[in-house]
Structure formats: structure tokens, C-alpha cells
Amino acid sequence: MPDNHYDAIVVGSGISGGWAAKELTEKGLKVLLLERGRNIEHVKDYHNADKEAWDYPHRNEPTQEMIAKYPVLKRDYPLMKPPWACGRMNRPIPT
Ligand SMILES: Cc1cc2nc3c(=O)[nH]c(=O)nc-3n(C[C@H](O)[C@H](O)[C@H](O)COP(=O)(O)OP(=O)(O)OC[C@H]3O[C@@H](n4cnc5c(N)ncnc54)[C@H](O)[C@@H]3O)c2cc1C
Image (cartoon, rainbow, N blue to C red):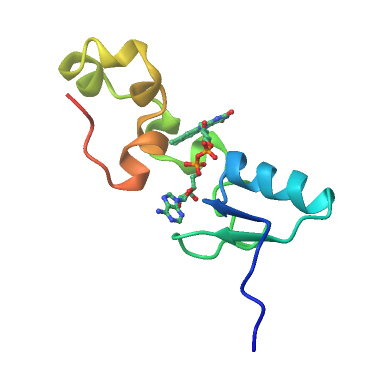
């Protein structure tokens, strides 16, 4: 019969959960790490890691149209890198 008992269960393998799991396992605890997302292999699946600005539309900068359309957001994170934060993830730009 499999041993399904764990000292700790960590939900999510982002930086918070990943780091928690690392710390707990290093202390010798038996840890179950649950992740709902797809499997991402270190290095192999980092598709944007070696791209340069010229690999993106408009060099990864907001267009004049975007700046005019979203005057508040243009100061902030989502529009600082629109293809990266919104467009490349096929998400609508928040209004
Ligand atoms: C486009 C973008 C660019 C960014 N760039 C930077 C940057 O350059 N530098 C920087 O420092 N920060 C950056 N950030 C912010 C950084 O990514 C976050 O602050 C950080 O990832 C948060 O870590 P986290 O572990 O709290 O959450 P997350 O990384 O979101 O991890 C949560 C994990 O939990 C999983 N999960 C959620 N619910 C469940 C469930 N019910 N069951 C199982 N698994 C679940 C999710 O799939 C996910 O893998 C960026 C964020 C975005 C969106």
C-alpha cells in the first residue's frame, strides 16, 4: 500500500510554493507539491529567455495608439511592456 502521508502539502510551485517546498525538503520533511499548471522544464521551456527587443512587435514597447487609448495604464506595469504582459499572453488590456 502506498504511503500517502506527508509532513507538509504545498499548493502551487511558483516562487513562494517552490521555495517553501525547497526549505521543507532540505529540513528533511516529506513534502507533497501540487501544481495545477502544465509542466515547465527548466531552460527547455523558457521560450522568451533568449529573445531580444527586436524579436517583438514594436520592440516590445507600447504603440502611440495604446498610449493614447490607455493614458493611465501607460505609466504602469501592464503597458510598460504590452506584448509581454498582455499581448503575448493574448489577454485583453485592462481598462
Ligand atoms: C508578465 C509578468 C512578468 C513578471 N516579471 C517579473 C520580473 O521580471 N521580476 C519579478 O521579480 N517579478 C515579476 N513578476 C511577478 C512575479 O512573477 C510574481 O510576483 C511571482 O511569480 C509570485 O510568485 P507566487 O509564488 O506568489 O505566485 P505564482 O508564481 O503565481 O505561483 C502560483 C502557482 O500556484 C499554482 N496554483 C494556483 N492555484 C492552484 C491550485 N488550486 N492547485 C494547484 N496549483 C495552483 C499556479 O499554477 C502557479 O504555478 C511578473 C509577473 C507577470 C505576470
